[in-house]
Length: 213
Image (cartoon, rainbow, N blue to C red; front, side, top):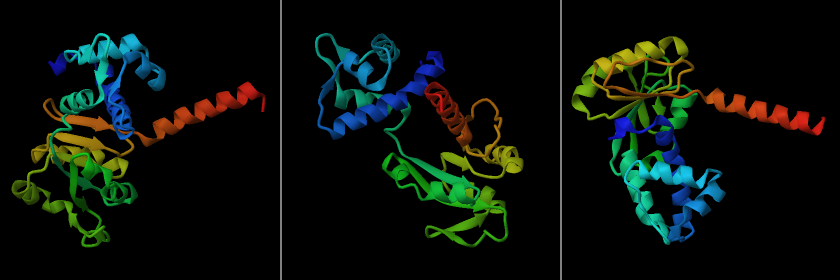
C-alpha cells in the first residue's frame, strides 16, 4: 500500500505527527481539519486527502481524535517500533547526533560510533568508545543494527554506504555533503543541512528587498 502513496504525502506525515504531539501536550482531545489547516498552514482538503490515503481517521461532525490519529500516524511511519542505530564518522556532526537525547525517546537507540581516523579510534564520545570501521563486519554479524548514519567527509560517503550495504544494513541516513546511491531494497535519506539555510537566506533577501533596506 505504501508504494502507491505520493512521496509528498509521506513527507508531510512527520509534520502532522509533531503537530499532534503538541496538541497532546496541551491536553487537546480532538481537532478538525479546518483548525489543523489554520494552525499548520495547510489546506484543509489537502489534510483530509493525505489522511484518506491510509483509510481516513476522522468522523464527520467530530473531527479527529488527537490520540488515535497520532497513534495511527506513528504506526504508518514505523514509530511504534524501536530501532538500533550506529554512526559512521566521529566528527562534530556524528558526535552531536550521538548526544541527541530525543532519538531514544522516539525509539531510535544510537548504540555505537565508528571512524577510520587513528586519532579518533579508541577515544570516547559520551561514554561510547569510537570503534575502528575495520571492525564493522564482525560487529554487524553480532549486533542487530537497523539504521546507519553517515557523518563522514564527502569523499568517504559513497564508500561508507557501499560498505554498510554489503554488510546487510537496510537503511541509511546520510549527513555527508553529497548524495549517496544504494541498490534497490535499501532505504536512504540524504540530508543537506545547508539546503534549509539557503532557503532562509532567500527569505531574508526578499524581506530586505521588501523593506527597501
